[in-house]
Length: 279
Length: 325
Image (tube, rainbow over all chains, first blue to last red; front, top):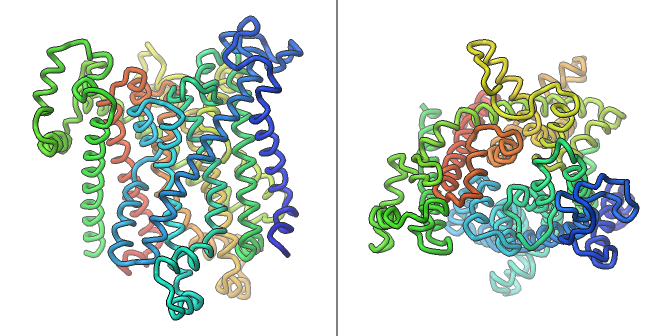
């Protein structure tokens, strides 16, 4: 069975794709779906949900449209999740590949460095980084990337170590290819599938991290985000539960969708493992 | 003897890691935008010109870089984490005062999540493919996707605001004159919601891991042998499968300790739990960098401690590890 067939026959993964596509659609077309921007006061504050058709999810403490805020918040979550994962891959993949391919001192040094970053509590480090470099979308993205790359490096190292012992690598060496060329053209392409699985799960974790930072007040002050919405509504939870409830649901749906897709990809790309798991 | 050497090498490694974090803290302070002396004083205390002059002198900000680094790291080694001008007290005192509450919270959450996670994982694996298994795995998947702080808020809303069963705020009843057992009971009541909401996410992680690991081990040959001997299902699960399946879970639990300590910042913020996480949150708005970095260092130390504890647990669970090294 082809990879795509296996993936599309996985109900959980398909549900995940559907949910994620919906979130992406809302994020892209937010300005078309809502005529006002998320910072704009449109009604009296604390309007309960489902009371006005034009404002289905009610208004927040300053009379801003909660539904519009959710739609614009999707942009920040997806953008930060995606870009920070890409940056983490840019750090983790080369480091892990060099460590696994060259071994010896390179491996020793790279792994000590990775271990150090793995020991540091990653959320605490993200807080410190964003607090010191001022909260902007760029600093938040970079901080999340800096705390997320170590597992990538370890995974790539382990994969490269096992692939480089295979026969086609010996064949490439005999054919006279240089070491760096073998690493990039022969070894790395064979490690892509576990990296893809890990990356899809990392986007989910990054979204959770971003929302947690915003919740603590470390969000970009110019970008509406789900975590900020919950943080701002925290003190009025007794009177206006919906202000914290809806953004939380949005986060759960998005993260769940990405986790489902990640698991589906894992089953589709590593059929041996998945069969073992279900035995 | 080998265990002693292993423990000793762990302690040396822990000290080296903490030293490296101290150096990292120094560079972070200097990387922050603005005059390091002003940064050290924090936004609140920045008005006092004399104080800033004193700081400049104390850290020798006019001296070469490596001298400054030596002074800063030397101070940390002696337990000097700087002074919080916002709170008007040495950072180390602030942390020492609040550390017990954080230790109580994180340790309780750790024990709950690990024991319940393993138990539920075993239960799910035993019923693989049945409705109860699907229900458990779906629930775990859901908790895995739920932000900690949001779950905490919703727990406050339901169990404290709507049902009124448990207090959703603080460490103990303010103004109560409880002592002894009554006080312990009061603290326990306050502990339930924070510890459960902090633990649920990790419980989901450990449950998924235990389930997968149990299923993998259950295909091994020695399990077939045990079945052929006529042993009952529960006995095989407990004595043959679980003992082998639990190892990767304990390893993961040690690695996850850092996330538990980080999660405490969120939980303590929601529940006004007077621990170091709450201290960090309060310091964020005040830009009290000394306190933020102090909490960061201490939380890293806690992670290292958790790791050493799981290492000891590991040796108890699998005696081969001590014998091998």
